[in-house]
Image 1 (cartoon, rainbow, N blue to C red):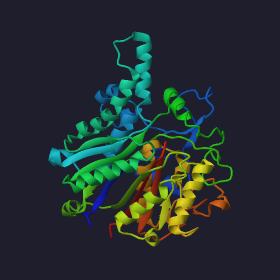
Image 2 (cartoon, rainbow, N blue to C red):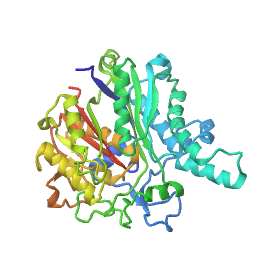
Image 3 (cartoon, rainbow, N blue to C red):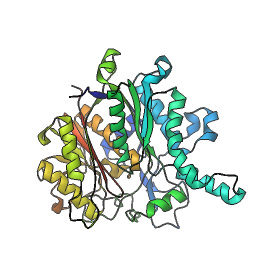
Image 4 (tube, helix red, strand yellow):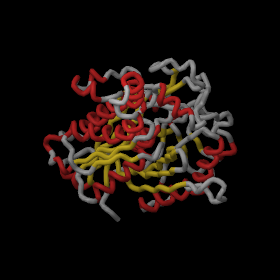
Length: 404
């Protein structure tokens, strides 16, 4: 087996908690961060709820010189990176620059930046770059800001595979560490709660138009009618296990297994790829289904997609044989930030021996899932499986386990 890669620090910016401690306290208590949009007037749009991060003022966390160069998403990412590094006990200026890198994910982010460029284009003319150019360039800028701010000159990159991208970024970070890097900042933070971003998200046809924050996002429920989008995510510090032990770092757990697949063309008659991604991740971790204590579901809240996910879980683990949860019902789906946030949540669940709930949902019997609802469930956990699916057929699965 390849050398273990462990998580030594986490930084969370989530709609129901700014900072890891606040987020975990809210999640285990079942407190939601979903509400009516406040960042712009949502009245003209069919979907008016979102998971917004309350009380975040970048001036409280970042130097003033960075504010004109960044948008809301990048500021969240910079703060999450600062918190993750501090949590890991890492002072970047004491490390060799080429030992550290940054691999993150983005899918819906950059819309606010692009919107400003469009507005400037309309008002000022061709002296401004096109919004499409700026949007593509923004992916690299987001990662670059983290690496430049912290003097990280090792491997860097951005993965773009929609909601699955956050897990894919963690896997790429693990590869880079196994190739010789000592430390990689990885994960995803997304934010597209702005008019242009919202219009783009609505084109998926998967957004909930419910007006009640408690019932708008109901995965695996008979009343499921789409998801609520949100902003935020998590950045993690990944290190080689031996290097982390050498410096006496506290370890949350290991990124033990990863699998990714792509769904076949619609109408081909071939089965979706999620089940295969799960099996690949388990094989990569050297673990059996019985070793997994909880599954963190992708939770699309679209009946067809919920059926596919429930069937994949049941086929691998047996109907109702493994606890399943989707705490993203308290944050909304955070695009590429969702998977990394679920990985952090899984590590905290293993640490504290508790499975957070899927709030507001009454599980439909047809899915045959042991869905944890209403309140947290005590459990002795050694390993967890995190699932994420992206629009157009991306499937990713990550196994995390206790460092013990």
